[in-house]
Length: 582
Image (tube, rainbow, N blue to C red; front, side, top):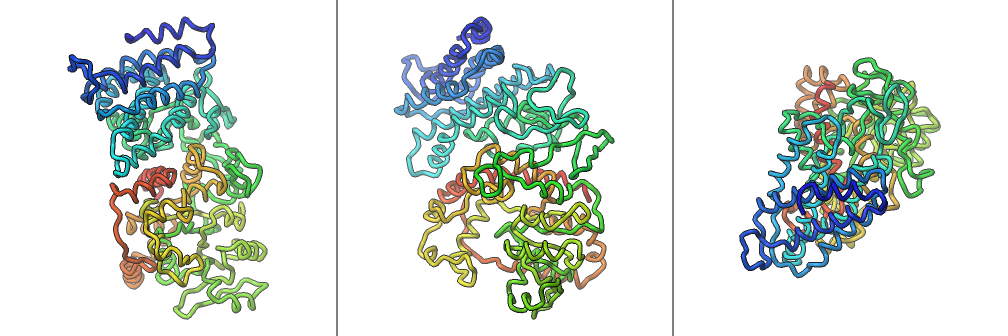
């Protein structure tokens, strides 16, 4: 099959709306990846291909296939049959004993970039990059068939192989039909109107705000091939802040960065473009239903991070468990002497209840000041809302792990300002396991964990699975998918000032500068010493065995928390970008 043949066949087959030619082309590519012998093999025996040969060979085939796909956009393409054909071709040769290298894709990517840069539209040439990445992902997944079943590499390859077909289907669907058809967030465009689907001619370029730097974002094939295209393109263009690739996968507002703040809107250059409210992404009818549910008051009552901080705003620390939150809480309370509304009230429930029905500021034995409501429980949040906590001005900071529930405390007049520390999900899960094994004083203590190994825990239903993404999207019933991840990224980008636990000192300074606390800290040696002491102590931090990135335990936890890993990678990008806010 020569370059161009697939495109010609696709263009000439409009009478066949099933997309059989494209199906056959993709099936042939997938089959050739497995079965085509190395070029220097005169006997035609199946053996390992050299990476460079794989890259060059694949490109001509995929170029034709991508052209065929592009020409059939209006004739009805069967995505399930496309991905099914690829999967069937791969599964049909389970006896393959050769290792297939995919490093050769780099040469093809470079060629693809040169073709893509000739035009500004997301043309067929750019779709070649997506198609090439997709098939390269499948080639990598084949390694699962030849590696020892219990090796760490095999575990990783097999988990990627399980997802590859469905995720490539999602990428192809977005590529051809747009984000809305794939069930992903679509931002408003032009003049404040919400305009979903493919852009109208002349609608203006779109700026990619969703920085894709995860190991396997959207298409989680071997090595995150599609993400490699985006990231490498950005590096070669000299753009280390925003990535202008995969235009069909991301649909921001316009070339100017438009923002929204509840009912109000603003843009960096004064244009009145408005992003859709977060609740527009809902797929569930209400809280507790399966699907994404973002309450209306989350959009309305949390301020957007890029808007100026008002003295009427209330800082809200979103406490992600085992991510340095206890240390931050101690620093705010003991070093900055802030009155907090948190779980401290639950430490002396009888005293707190006796002082109701009014809000009161109490002090615990070690000097920490707090309001007599518990913002970590549903009952406590109801009390806080009824007593007007946000408007009272009694709390300098609200601390809770209930991101959406807490937003009901705030209002347009007293908006919440969310900030949080993020930690790598695998490290967080490992820390959680070893902590729960010994923390007999915690309500979550489970004595059955004491005799369980980390791997057993990772495979059990006791281990958390994408807790951060689930918390941001209110999805605690069904399996988390790409749509949940995209919505979580959007919430993070708009509503949360990001800190990274691995850059703890820098994150704390960022928080203090953003909220206007830094001058008081920098000019007070006692406060600086207090913060340094709290950081070094690391309250609620326990030593435990380290888990290496190549271990089965690490890979198992990473697989179960794949969406959180992607969100964490995105949070690191936001952390760099948000430096401009202070």
